[in-house]
Length: 240
Image (cartoon, rainbow, N blue to C red):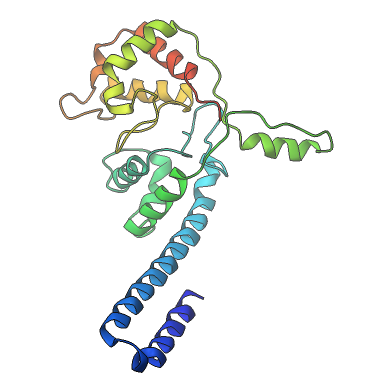
């Protein structure tokens, strides 16, 4: 459809050229053609992302909500730059994760695919407020409606202490509200079990945390401090 529109615009340009300033009209035509070509590319990316999501959904859920036990992380609403960087790390074997191996081989997941799926998932919004049932829904419908809701249970811990440590040590990268920034991931709204699993990997040196020390600031914190930070993150989930 977009290609047809470009061709139509070209035909109109040729018809109008004798009656207008050729240079000005040509510039307008080029702008129109570029715009339509961009729309066509975006549509192609969206279709590819939807196709890729069919594969990702096997573990991460239809809406990128992840696994309720924290075995698979939430991807919906995550930082686009962060997701792209992690997929590139999986593909390059810089981040070792065996379940991801068959999906991130360079022959299967191109740079364009990485950009498409990262953009798609970052734009997915999951409500944190349970839906209002009208009474006529069957059990399956209610279950499907709840699948679109992201509710993280409150974790035990000293929220005040966790908030103090988080704002001092973590907010500069992950933002004060825990939503992340740039290439740093969103933490709020993520499964507590998954976050704890990743913290353990950082502390053991199995996954690099930053450039100065592969374990990062997490290695300097007490177990109770980490517990309190996770409890704090569950307390600041936005109500949407």
